[in-house]
Structure formats: structure tokens, C-alpha cells
Length: 88
Image (cartoon, rainbow, N blue to C red; front, side, top):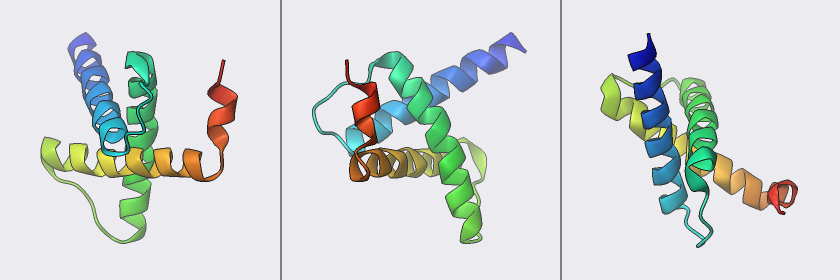
């Protein structure tokens, strides 16, 4: 049980990192931001792909779908200027 959570958090961090690199604007997200971005990106990616009738198989498919979702989340945050809530 603990091992699966460690793997999930590592995967979410990887997905958030990859999404932030693909949509890079030079601002670092930090490891916590990458975990949150990866988690939300995974949910959004799976939802978006299910709307068009596609799914993912295996770990590589999960990563690809989640990265696309993370990029979509980053784009939406930038498009609607939602990042202002995260400014210090």
C-alpha cells in the first residue's frame, strides 16, 4: 500500500515536471506544484481522452495521457489568467 503511493507520487511529479517543461515559460513550479499539476493533469487528461473515445494502456500510455492533461491545465490557467491566485 505504501509502495503504491510512493510510485503514484513519483509518477505525478514526473507528469507535472514534463507538463511544465512542454509548456515552459521559465517559471519553476517546485516539487509540490508538480505533484498537484500531475494529479490534476491526470484527471483532466483521462476525462478529455474519454470524451473522444480514447483510453490508455500501460504506464507509458498513462504518462502520455496525463502529460497532455497537464499541458491542457497549464494552458487553461494561462488563458483565463488564473495564475494570479498563486502569486505571492
